[in-house]
Image (cartoon, rainbow, N blue to C red; front, side, top):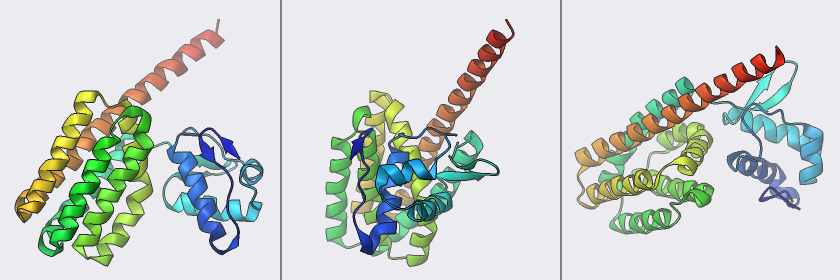
Length: 243
């Protein structure tokens, strides 16, 4: 069954739980459910064709990933990331990803660097607002290869904690970024690639940190503006109700 651009059909047994999680995660990342919206187990079970027990388990996993928040008396709702929370995520990313970049320079093979160039080209080909979700996936693939080349399983586990929220922020910022900003992002990413190709660990580390910090500034500005707009809307609604 297709609805809102999401395939709601979930395959059978073996990896049923993982498939349910993946289906719901994709719906969240595609903005099918809005921040603050309550998720009803019965409705999700009807959409996916799986049991409410499977839905409940999947929701718990997505809560652990930070995409959902459990609210007393209401159940699971879509997480509303604040400006401050987003900043903390990017601070962690800057520290982790810059260190991973240094390890990639030291440990990646020449073939991995060549493959990285191909993945960056693929991400550039999807760098338009209407393909924001696919673009985020391609950037995830770039990050995955850099992680593979760094060869540090502990860092991989640490990065996995942030993964879903990073992908979410990548998706929403890609939707609203200007042409100029998107172009500059790819220029910066290619600069990091050139540092990798030159095996310059200091430069790769610095450029990666700069890249993440630039993303942080844009994401927090976007969330700040969204919060201000919601505040204005709430004030207007309150004034209308008092008339």
